[in-house]
Image: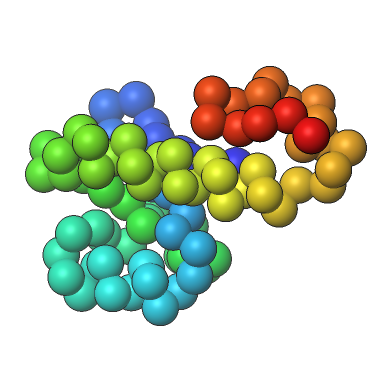
Length: 87
């Protein structure tokens, strides 16, 4: 899982990679502590206060991070990404 939200929720939760990065984003008030996802560097970016381009960047980075951690067998079953070259 690379992102989570609920219908009618206040934002989207993504993994930013590690606890210190998540903590820094929360301290800077750029994100909030992700409810139910307290470990693993998860934060919630509110819909109303986070610019769309920044949300897109965080979602893409979260997806890339999770995808990179997949086994080669699992990764090859996913579609080729627009910015990815085939090996």
